[in-house]
Length: 165
Image (tube, rainbow, N blue to C red; front, side, top):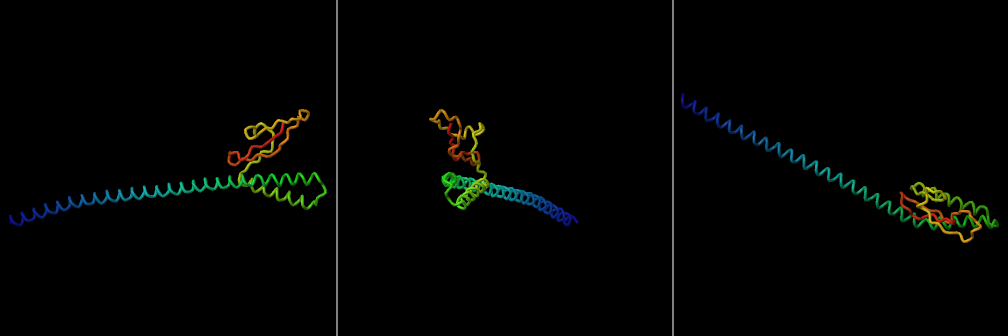
């Protein structure tokens, strides 16, 4: 019987060793799974950060392009506005021409306002930083008049308003 008991004990020891090894392997597997999950989460965070950066860059590029476009459009707006003023002064022109130019002018202004372009056409103090003043040589006339309107896009001055004092 002793032999069979010895064999039983040896088998139990081997089983215990195998169980210990199994536990160690399971711990390693769990560590590997945790590392895999951490790596996956880090990579997902990197991807999200890249997406955010791309969106920020797209906004910056769009804003720069919009600013460039509006700056190029401002002289055209001035020409149209000057043409309307001129046509009103000479009264001999076709009313449809004046009306057409006025509609184009209003349409352009409405469009740029949709892109949050603010037009400075007031003489008030709140626009003090956005106004360039020209001294009037004729001191008899104390009237303040706007020579050219100013334009602001996203708190950045595209052109200061020019007023005559």
